[in-house]
Image (cartoon, rainbow, N blue to C red):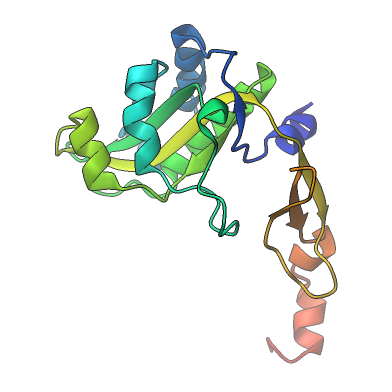
Length: 200
């Protein structure tokens, strides 16, 4: 079951705007993040929820979408996320947040997939402008924004080709292709490293 959720948990960037994400559902997703591991158990993350058109319109322009798709400015007006979760670090609790926001985001997105939704972690953010738009206090540092909704696109996993290109791309039908390295390529073998003289 967990493998199926992980495989379905892709970076979706186009959504069906007729399907809302409720406040209760957003809270359920954040509760999964709350129950996840944090460095030193400091629990320094805070979460801002957005599922109204007014607030979503403030968030969307401050995000950059799909760096590899140079000619694509992001989802069209009728394919935008219906909700967002802004993940922030509370500097009153800790001055470093390590990988806590990555762990939290993965938990949130797995929860979204389980409910038939999907999303995208976005780290390319105009943080000063978003802070101003949402009136976020200085002690909260914006770490990630998760865009959420009902996916309106198909994402296809495929093997990295012989050229080694890992850039995702879209075909003529608008299907999103994501190359993944093989399991053998990412496993480190001590014997192989020794035989190549990389360790002694």
